[in-house]
Length: 216
Image (cartoon, rainbow, N blue to C red; front, side):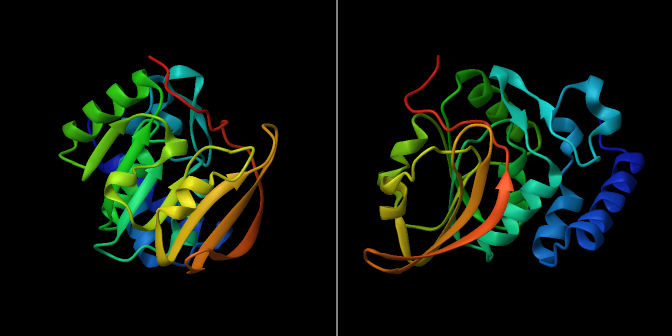
């Protein structure tokens, strides 16, 4: 599969939809969404629909998030170029690629071996090299590389993973969906002191569940 003028045209339409219908205003996010070829991260049978605001099945019974969800989570992170971002749930690598297009230094963890292998191969094919890509338990984060400026969790957690909050810089932000499997609420935590956080709520979403340990 190539990235053709047709795909680029569809991305332009998607970006206008994200801007005008979803209300995404961060130009860094919109620029990244227009740059990253989403169709290359999903099965070819879905290629014609890759730039519609839809989720698709990927390996290991997981899904690639709606483009609007990727854009909203990315905007809530307030990423600045050069910041250290920890991503929990690499998935197929699409969100990783968007963060890298936003000039973040990305450290990413995936617990499903099939997805870890797929995303590593796919990102390499696109000449994208995260600072660190790990097969492991997202609940533990990456303490070796902490602290991080930003943390993004791309799967729904039933309880707040406090270990991740510890790995944030003061002033750092974590965006995470929390709640039961059928419906989570998207939250943004801002670390305002060593153990103090401001919490904001951004509505209901559906994410695949965040699971502990790893799956070979």
